[in-house]
Image (cartoon, rainbow, N blue to C red; front, side, top):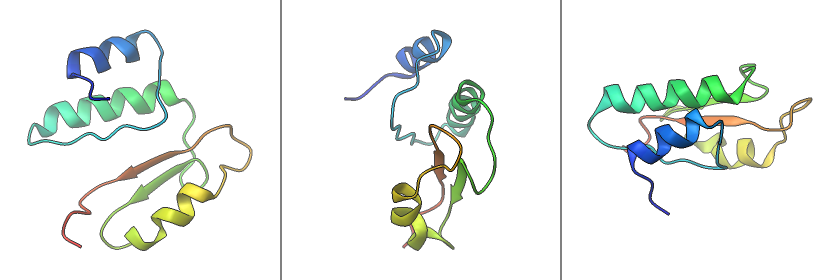
Length: 86
């Protein structure tokens, strides 16, 4: 289901976070703004535990990161950036 930026911001204001988002486009300010709001609503982020950054250098770990639970946390936030050149 495709969600407009307006609907996404409305959901985030209401405290709703879905399981997966694909944020893309050339408006980097809007993308960064939405990501920041998602991170804020997500709660405590511990790098390597429940907050994982994926890029072209470690894209091969994406599947294992998805399959590995966030130890001690109910959910995990995985942010993949600049992965299109592989």
